[in-house]
Image 1: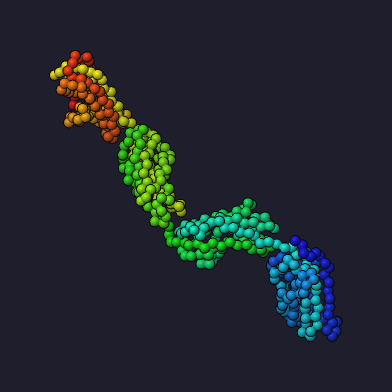
Image 2: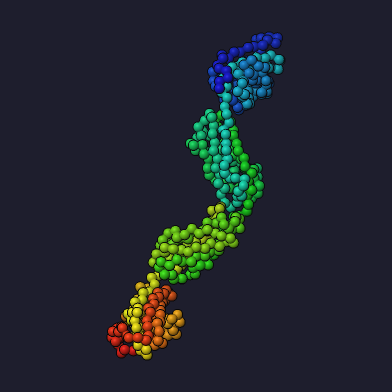
Length: 430
């Protein structure tokens, strides 16, 4: 807003006793017709006198509204070159500037200059981060975020600074983005801080925002321990892997810690919530075949991270094919039941497989080993009646596959087992 506009500077000499002996005053800045913003301003002038040394000339700067009374804003002697300067705040209603000079004899001169004052507004600063409600830590950067607006200037013309009543000036982000945002991070020492963000525009107008902030000592990462799966565990492909970890954070509730499980083969496997008191449990599904290194990361609210790893193997369970007896086999009382099974495993050779036999839910003490072709065989004697034979094959990683068949003893035999007849020597397996 222009409050007054360009009047011609005029010089008026006041005769004390001899007009020809009066000093002379000149305003060098601002010049006639120039516009100045309200707020801090610096005026520059020069005075001289034929009979008085320059440093003995006393100058007074004054400001006044268009129809108001002058108020003195600066007083003092000139320097050796006669230069006089005044730095003061100019009000939007100020419209006239006066420079008066008096020599040691009392002779005086004055210059009157009309001003064009443009009212300016200070930047408006809103500090959104950090929050008083959230504690900060001396060993971690403190995120800061603010928005700044200025009615008279583009955001890029604004300059920000940070100061703490405890630490003094603080290094932080100083450049306001084109959208008026100011983001970044800074660090503070331990203690209670009154943190102030000050923003200054090219007119020298200053806006500020302040937050009270408690800064603690060192923030440590969470404590993390993997309880399951155990190292070197082998699980069958397609089976869920039980996962359990213990997590503890000293600076925030355990439930605020984010736990993520990843595999170098499959990427992110699971995001596991932490339940009190500090346990994170889940069933890890979908792991592909192979040797996995599971990496568990626990990240707290301050982005402190703890990691732990465990190596496991996802394997293919062995296969079992019951050649004899087939389901529904009936045999005579007193006749043994021929058992022939074929075993295979992609990871373990036949020699590392074991066959267990359960009769009606009771495991037999004999453990059968297949031959080099993966075939295992035996004969079992059963009492009259219907029985369930369950066959379980287990590999070197303890992965198992089980199948069962029902047979009946006490009736007309309805099946034969050519495979048993073909086995070398006809001996029972083992």
